[in-house]
Amino acid sequence: MENVEVVVAHHERATLRVGDVFLKIDADQTRTDVAVEAMAMAPIPTPEVLWRKPPVLALAALPGTALGRLGEPSTASPAAWAAAGAAARTLHDAPLPPWPGRSLDELTSTLDGECEWLVTNGVLPTDLVERNRRVAEAALRPWTPVFTHGDMQITHVFVDGDEITGVIDWSEAGRGDALFDLATLTLGHEEHLGDVVAGYGTDVDLDVIRAWWSLRSLLAVRWLVEHGFDPSRPGCEVDVLRSRL
Figure 1 (cartoon, rainbow, N blue to C red):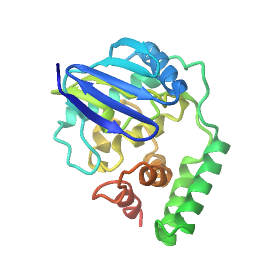
Figure 2 (spheres, helix red, strand yellow; figure 1 turned 180 degrees about the vertical axis):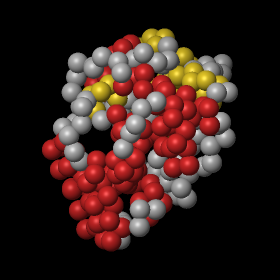
Figure 3 (cartoon, rainbow, N blue to C red; figure 1 turned 135 degrees about the vertical axis):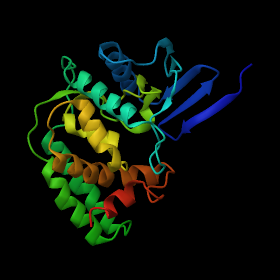
Figure 4 (cartoon, rainbow, N blue to C red; figure 1 turned 45 degrees about the vertical axis):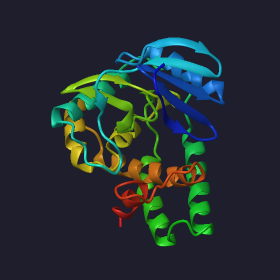
């Protein structure tokens, strides 16, 4: 019997590792449905689905290690970061998934509500929230929808040397803004933005990527706090917001 490692656990979902198998347990099977379908459609490496018995999804472990962790220096090479950018471009060039993503109006309304909550509850200083809300405005513009991962943070991208071995956690996949994926990938690691953009292989609006850094961080703080995580750890979401001042 292999040891059981708790990878992540909160009241919405849990992920366990048993040997070379990951067991994902999700209270919302719609998220699992999206993840399974997105992995089947994605033109980049993804974990092998071993079996599914709701609420459990069993996935094979990917070779290699995560590109990095938020709040910690990445030991991955510039070439590995560029490969992550290239993988994002391959995904974005693929046919759109059949399900929709968040609309611009929905995103704007959600952002306004989160900013109000952060200020009303004294979670963050008013000037910090207001400044980042203004920065985030650049991301709130019409975009051409592409197939996005939706949560392409560096812990979800696995590399072996300079090669991408796979991307995990597809439950947020859908139609969205390509620059959101690039911003999520580089959040807290601005020093690797040039590598990612070089790998992506086309001109991107860096101001919009920076706007998505502010927007994603503003949206994340309450969720992190309510699920037992600390967004104020060095290099994490609150530091990302402070860097806009």
